[in-house]
Picture (cartoon, rainbow, N blue to C red):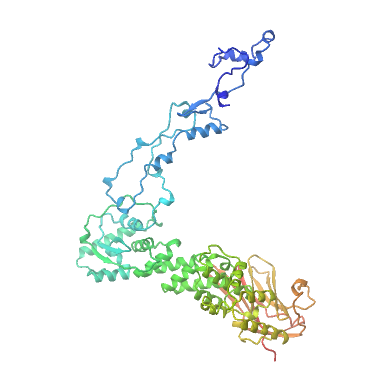
Length: 626
C-alpha cells in the first residue's frame, strides 16, 4: 500500500508497459482528470476513465531509512511526524552519554583550573520538525549549557558533606579552616570561632590544648576571627534555603596543610545520626537563623543533642511540635524522650490521646508505638474512644502488628480475630510465652462497658485470658442486671466508668448518641446555639415509649422500668486550636434520672469559642443503690 501511495502514476491492466513512471506534467494531469477533454474525445477513448489515477500526495524521504513525510507539516500527519522524530537521536540520549557522575566528593573538589570544558562538537544536532527540517536545507544545533544537563533523581547526591561545604566555603573562601573534625568516617573542616556554639566541640578543643573561648593569645587572632564571623554570617543569612543537593563544583581544597590544623575526634554511637543529619547540624553553627526541615529533624535533633548545640535543639523541638502526624508521632516521641525534650513528648502524647482511636488505629503506623506509650495513652483520662470494645480491638490489632512484622498492610479485624483463634486452645494467650508481656494492656480495659453479646462471644473465641476471668465478667453483668444496674467493681468512675464518644466534624445543629447500659437508656446530645461556635452538651434518660428507640436497637435488650436511677457522669469536650488543645469538662456529677420531664435531664455544659472538629466523651457509672 505504501508503494502505491508513493508512486506518482499507476500501471493499470490493459495499458502499455512503456508508460513513463515520472511525474505527469500539469497539462497531462488535467487531461487525465478530464478537465480539458471534450465529449468527442471521451467517446473516441472508451477506456479513458481507466487512465485516471487515484489522487495522491507526494511524500519526501526523511533520514537515511525508508521513512516518509508530507512536505506540508500538517498536524494530522501523525505517522510521518512520529517516523521523523524516531529517525534522529534524542538530545537526552546524547547528553546522558557525556554526563559523568563523580563517585567521590574529591572528584569535584579539584581546582577550577583543572575543569574541562565540554566539547560541544560531539553533540548530535536535533533537527526541528518544520519546513526547514523537511527540506533538509537547515538544521538547528543546540549547544548545551549548565542548565541543559539532566540528572535524574536517583543520581542526585544525598545531603551529606557537600551540604556543609556549601556553607563553609561560600563566605570564607579567603579564610582557611583551622579545625579538622573526624566523625562518622568523614573529615569535617571547621572554623574555630563558630565552634563556641557547641559545648561538646568546645570541650574537645580544650582537651586538644586549644581554647575556643573569647580569650586569644594575641589581638591578630581575635580580629581575624571577628572578620570571618561577620563576613560569613552576612552572606549566609542572605539565603533562607538549604543548599541544593547537587554537588558544588566550585569547592576547592584549602591550601593550609592538614598538619597545621587542630585535629579533634568525636565518637557517635547513636544510629539515628547519619552524615546528612550531622552535616545539617554543624552547618547551622555558621548561621544566625537556624534551618531545619521536617524530613531530617529527627536525625538533626539527635546530632544537636550529641554536640550539645542548645539553640538547634530548641529549633528542632519547635519543628517537631508543628509537624506531628500519623507517620512520625511515634518517632518524634521516642527521640524526644531520648533527648530530654519534655515539651515535644507531651505534645505527642496529647496528639495521641485525641487521634489514636479515630485515625492511628486504622493505619499501619500503629506498629511504631511502644508498649509504654500505648499503655500511657489508653490509661489517660483525656483519651478519646467511641466505646470500650474499640479499646479491646485496638490493643489486639497492635499486638497482631507487633507479632507479625512481615505484614506491610493494615489487616482487617477479622484477620486479627482469626489469628488469635488459630492459637493453641490448651492455654490462653496472656498466660503463654508470647502474651505475658502484654498483660498490663489488658488490665486497663474497662470490661464492664462491653455488654454486647456478640462482642462477648468473640472475646471468648479468641481465648485471650483465662476462662475464670471471662466467667467473672459475665457474673458482673448478670449481677448488675438483677440489681437494677448497680456496678460492684471499682467505684472510681475515672477508672471504671462506661465511655461513649462521638466527633463533631461539620456544623451540625443537633447530634445525639444512644447509651444502653444494664437496661437503662440515655441519649447524649450536642446542640449548636445561636451564638457562633457555641454548643451545649447534656444527656437525658429515654422513656420506654419514646420514638428515639427503634425496634432493632431494643429487640433483644432488657429494659428497666425502675422509676429512678442514681447515676454519676462526666461530660468531656476537647478541641484543637492550632497547636493548643482546649479541654472543657465537668466534675464528677451525680443525678437521679427519672421518667419525669425535669428529672430526666442532666446538667448542661455550655462551651463558647470552640473550633471543629470537637471530640465529645460521656462517661457514666451506676453506683450501688442505698
